[in-house]
Length: 104
Picture 1 (cartoon, rainbow, N blue to C red):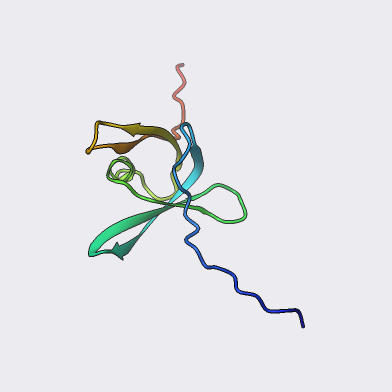
Picture 2 (spheres, rainbow, N blue to C red):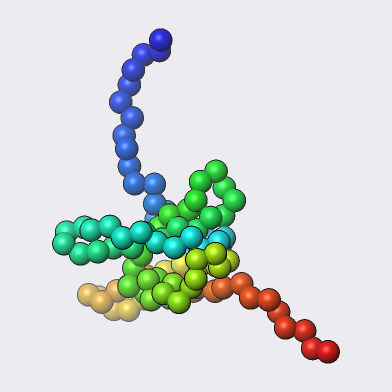
C-alpha cells in the first residue's frame, strides 16, 4: 500500500478570468446553492470533455441563460468587466444554436 497524503478538495467551477474565454456545448441546467444567506446558481454545460463544465452564475449570466432550455447547445463568451466602480460587472455574450432556415 502506498503512502497516504492529503489532497485538497476545491470547487471545480470554471472561473471567468480571460477576455474571450469561451464555453461551448449542451446546456444541462443549473443547481441552486446557498452562500451567505443568498441563493447562487451553478450552471452546467456538457462539452464532450472528461466531465461537464460548471460555472457560477452572475446577475448578467443568470439573466441571459434564463430562457435557455436544458438540452440546447450554447456558446458563452466572457467579454471582461464593464461599468464604473463601484458598479463593475462581468459581461457575457450568450448564443444558442438554431437550425438555419433555407429559402426555396
